[in-house]
Length: 282
Ligand SMILES: [Mg+2]
Image 1: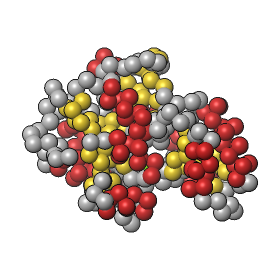
Image 2: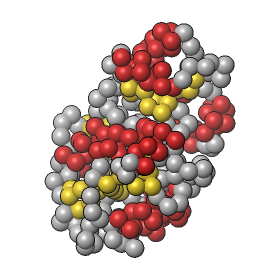
Image 3: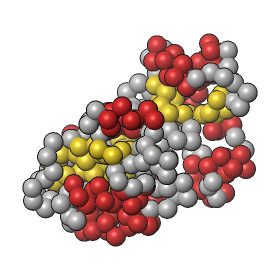
Image 4: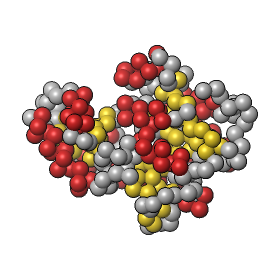
């Protein structure tokens, strides 16, 4: 797809839908290099929609820091939150959010998913460490989050994040394949793998978001990990943001094939360059 030929106007707009961890945020959760562009997009009425494995409470904190009023997709597509539903056509099921706005659930509750994760481990004769079983100290050590940040990250509703136990040699691809054979989805992020319901990946959430926005002309998506491929594949233009050591190896074939653009720099710097150039805002 060609870049838009004129600056984006609110009557027919692009949506920017972005992963957070490892994409817009670096490993210190810093996005300052993109902060001016985020403010500009907000002022110009171009929604920047986080689409992340983070919890709603974590994204709300990010939205406040970034000055965004847009919807956000949490827990790998488990739900879409609309803080200002009057600007969107939110289909049912939709439930009121405690602080205002509405939430559209797409996934299964974590209580339904957890026994299914334990069944996958038993079938593979292996052990997983679920995020919800980690102590706050262990979660802080694995994520680099503060105690307060770790508490927000633990408030899972729609997914069960996990890692393979250190002494286990099972490949994540084998876990993904068995989950798929059992009608589930396992997605690899950059710190945790995530067990989610079959109807709730980032690409399905993107499709629901498009239906909620009659003004959406096209979608620019940005991601960094295999758990972003459903999002990237559902976009009109897809950008992979590399880390300090380059793009994720599992995304390289699609970059080489020209399906995904590779941003020129890691994290917020590459994010801002790619978004500004594509939306002709540079
Ligand atoms: Mg990521």
